[in-house]
Structures are given as C-alpha cells and as structure tokens.
Amino acid sequence: MDNLYTPFFFNLNLKEMIFKKITHGIVLLSFLFFLTNCTSSDTENTARIQLKLVDAPGDYMSVNIEIINLQYKSNAEDNEWQNFNPEINYPIQVDLISLTAGNKLLLTDHVLPAGNLHQIRLVLSNNNTLEIEGNVPDQSFTAHLNTPSAQQSGLKLILNQKLEAGLTYSFLLDWDVQQSIIKAGNSGKFNLNPVIKVISETNTGSLKGKLTANVLSDNSKQVPLYNATIALYNISEDLIAQTTSNEKGDYMLYGIPPGDYHLDISHKSYAEHASEGTINITKAKVYDYGLIELSKRTL
Image 1: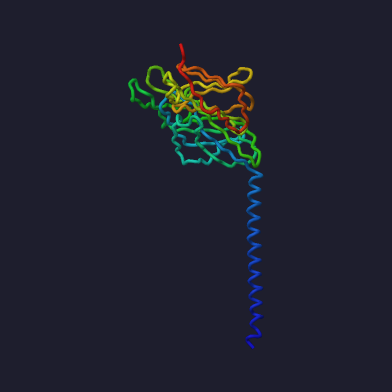
Image 2: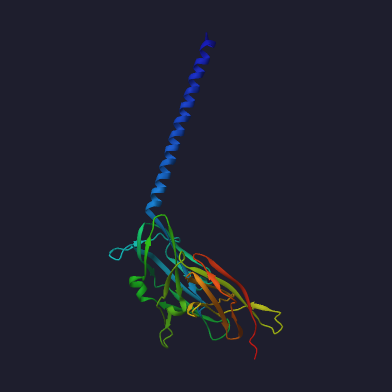
C-alpha cells in the first residue's frame, strides 16, 4: 500500500520545489529590475563632477596648504553653499609643489543634480606654510603664509557650467604658486593671494614631455633639466600656454584648446629647441612630446 502512494507524494514534493524555485527567480528578477530602474533613473537626473588640484612650478622648496572645505552653488541666486563630498577627510594637507608635471590631487568625485554648476568655493585654514632655500647650501627656512581672504570667505571660482544628465565633468584647479605668493616688503612675511584657473579637462587637451641636458662637451652625460621654459604658440604666433620644467625635467601644459600648435623650449644655459611641423591637440587627450635633449650653448 505504501508503495502505491510514494510516487504521489514524491510528485507533490517535486512540484513544490519547482514552484519555490520559480517564485524565488521571479523575486530576484523583480529586485534586479528595480535596481536597474533606480540606477537608470539616477543617471537620467544627475551628472558627476570631479575636481582635481594641480600646480605650475614655482621657485620654492614646498608650499603647504590646508583645505578645510570644498563647496558649491548651483545657481547665482542660491543663498546657501552646499558641501562636496571630499575624497580625503578634512583637513586636506597638500604640498602644491608636488602637483606639477601631471601629478594631480583628486579633491572630490561627486554626483549632482543635472542643471547648472555656478560656482565653487575652496576654504583654507590659517595653517599654511612656505619653505625657501637659505643663503648657504642645504639650508632652508619655513615661513608662515598669511591667508586672510581665504579664511573669511574662501576662494570663489566661477564655472557657470551646464550639467547634462548622465555625463561626467572633470575640472582642473590650476594653482599658480609663483603668482600666488607675495613677499610683504622687507618684513620677512609672506601673503598668500591664490591665483587659480579652472580648466575643463573634457573640452581641452594637454601636452607633456621631459627634458635632459648634456652637461659635458662630448654629450656623454645627461641630467634632468630644471627650470627650462616651455612655451606653446598657435599658428598666429599667439602664446597659448607656458610652464617650466621641474627638478626631474618633467613638464605639462593644461587647458589647451583643440588645434595645431608649435612648441619652443628655452634655457639660459642651453641651446633652444623648436618643434618641427605642427602639434595637433585634441579634446580630453594628452599629447606626449617625448624626451628632448638640450646641449650647451656655443659661443
């Protein structure tokens, strides 16, 4: 008798197992569909903002700043500042001199509602210093950098960027250290008056390269060439971008509009170099000019 009913109960158990698996599958598919819809909806209504800090070389051993907040306003009429989510916990301490020749510090990678990004604000503390070479070899001294305007209201930078849903916008905050530091007469004090240019990585290109110098007359020894001037001109001979090489001989030019250019490299002790033909810069790309060796000037 038992043998007659065993297949029946086995059949019921099998059907129940199949039903449960189908039910679980439907629930899982529904959940995945929900997640996909949410992600798609978020992408359709938001844009991503990346802010990166870079620096042009300066005649200092180090320039140490402390960032305590990074904020934005979507529209000019907004009364309140909104906070970006920082990539590094505040306070962010950074040596600007380290951010040359392609080195960047990502300050934020933040999702905002599509629409507009009117303005950003970089707020510094009063804990900013400058290290300068002394009058004798291997000697240096550190000076405090007075930053009154930054402490009170922050460094306000206008963007007026329209944000389209689903797109990523990457901006460079190009801090010019050489122009930003002002010596206060003969007092021995220094003021920080930040000069920062906002560059869209999305709409412009960059150019990088490396310089070495032949220090012996037979060109048998090359060393990195420091403090050479690299200048980029358009076909109308207008100066578009300029920088200097760092201690490793590296350099990088940012924010170059797409187009054709030529490059000049000069140094007080070495022969000049001029590019042959034109250099084509394209959007969101880095043009690698490669290694250039400069020889001693001949009398």
